[in-house]
Length: 282
View 1: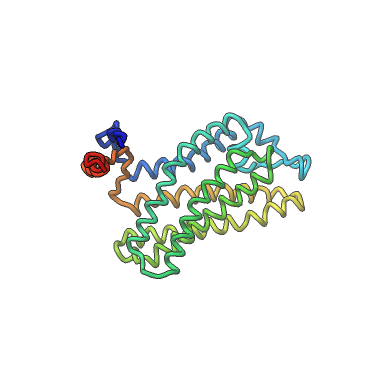
View 2 (view 1 turned 90 degrees about the vertical axis):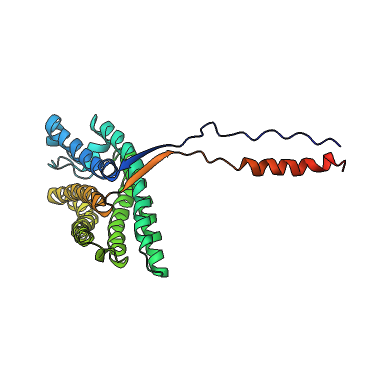
């Protein structure tokens, strides 16, 4: 019986490794500073070039003829043009670099991790909320407040809750991993994170109070406080992730393509073994 001849194993068309090393400052600039600066930019753009939108802004559904001096961020990033297009462009640019924070902090906390089940649970939950935060941001940005209020509000809730849990568990893991004792810089960054978390959690907890109060009583002050809390939360988000620059000094991120060649000699041996019975007439 004739054994069909096996085809030669195809080699990878790319034999060399193609890679690019990025400094941590580029990751921080694109993943942390850029979205915060872009959000404040589109809000400032509205006040500078489209002030009539602000001066005539009113929540007609809940409170008619009520002029509000500080519209929420949602209108600048999702309703008014061209701001919403600028924001969408920046948001999708910053998402890939932001995902690198998952790997960086997982490595940091695992490398110094005490061997305990609760610590591993804390890391897993922290990774979960880090993945959840961009999903909330995408919902808030893509589904505008006028086109789908409930989905927009749900996305905002996901974003603000997951971000505050991110801060909380980052601070907890930073403390119990022992890296505070490694260098004075790590102690300083932990203290800065704690201050940002306190400011952020106060702003976050105020939103489920101020907005319902506005809806029930048509209070301009309550609505302005809600909008101010949003702006504060955006700043906290940007600054908190910027601290990664000092958490990972002299760190490089490698991005590239690597061809992993299989052991061709081993494959040839297997071919010869399969062809041996035919040669022996078996």
